[in-house]
Amino acid sequence: MRILLIAMSGSIHTARWIEQIADQGWDIRLFPSMDNGNVHPDINNVTIYHSFYCAGRSMKRACKLRGIPLFYKPFALFARIIMNRFFPEYRVLQLARLIEKLKPDLIHSLEIQHAGYLTYEAKKRIKGKFPPWIVTNWGSDIYLFGRLADHEPKIRAVLKEADYYSCECKRDVGLAKEFGFNGETLPVFPNAGGFNLETAASLRRPGKVSERRNIMLKGYQGWAGRALTGLRALERCAEILKGYEITIYSASNEVVIAAELFSRSTGVKTEIVPPETAHKEILKLHGRACISIGLSISDAISTSLLEAMVMGSFPIQSWTSCGNEWIEDGKTGILVPPEDPEIVEKAIRHALTDDDLVNNAAEINYSLAVDKLDHKILKTKTIDMYKHVAQRQD
Image 1 (tube, rainbow, N blue to C red):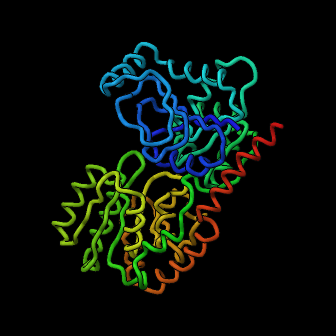
Image 2 (cartoon, rainbow, N blue to C red):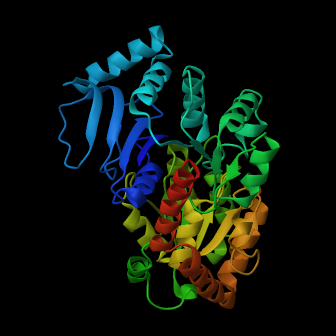
Image 3 (tube, one colour):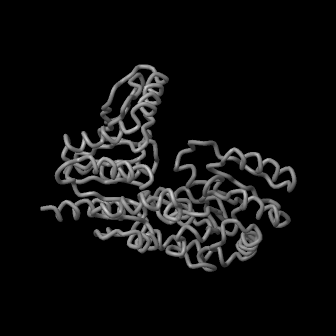
């Protein structure tokens, strides 16, 4: 089976998705939905179609690069800038030609705002039958962007043309139908792959979760992330944080500054996790934390929420992330508004002063992870999904 993926080649989510199917003997091709020449180091066993790329770097993996090689990275960047300025549809035409040449058994666009739009434009330029098309919803693709005037008609156009739709929230199944999707909805499960639970268990701090003295905070602050709300909530309850350390990962620049000011004003130590820290280390940090806070105005199932559940940390999660499909509010986690520090503060106080709550939640969440998040289970579901689509074409 030949599968053409249209996805962000620099994304860890793309890498983890491909990892699930890389050993099946299938012919997997990747067309980057963002033409920046980047390839995530964990992507392996695929053919990748750039426009211009830097050929001077060593590729210590089984990846084949296609496109125009240039031996100096700034030259490749300059070439892409020129093409985008004078021939803005060059990637659409390149993708259309590739589809006509490859004749893949199926096309799968991972994410809508880049991959979905790009695939839709390419489809309009192809005469004759288009391969079966799977559209996968990532994060806020419909839940947030579907409420924006510039994106709503584009999302509707993509979903109208798609044959199959996959997502990780039951919430988004209903939204896709509201936006005009009439094809087949594939099984709902996380897009980021599963967890090796044996490895995860080895990274967890021994003892009761209530005895941990770290707090994890997701540091995104921007169009969706609301880490500053989390910091403000922690500041409001600083008197109960004596002896705790706040660990902030994926921190935006303004969050780094705010964290330093927070430590100076409260005396509570903060640690900024370096960018590009390995996923295993992030898991280890969740495994040392009593609570893990993740706030954003929009998301699908937040990977950080699942990481906290697997590692025993009590999740305090914004209610915009369909976390209600994974945790029971007030029992196995607490769902909060993303921009209200007072309510987030109350959730933090509750979790840090109720040992039974966090200890019991850790046991329940891990049992759920065994049933639904084991990497072997999700790998099988991913493979079965592709086999199902392929069989429907026979």
